[in-house]
Length: 48
Image 1 (cartoon, rainbow, N blue to C red):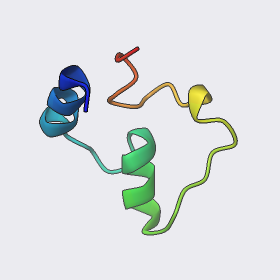
Image 2 (image 1 turned 135 degrees about the vertical axis):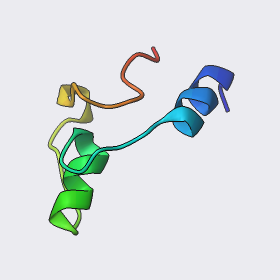
Image 3 (image 1 turned 60 degrees about the vertical axis):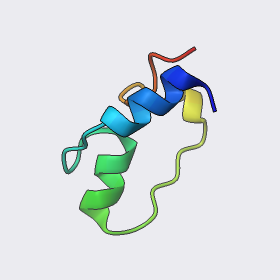
Image 4 (image 1 turned 180 degrees about the vertical axis):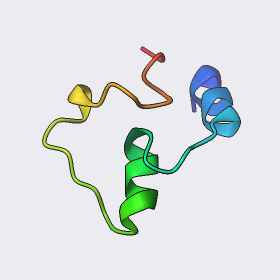
């Protein structure tokens, strides 16, 4: 696993309704997106 990816993942915090994880948490169900590249509020977005 990429070390930067690992660090961002371990340091990530999620607020209900914010980001893909937060929207999933709020809906208490799966959240599907057509193209994951279009998700702009992902905590891992800065890793390229």
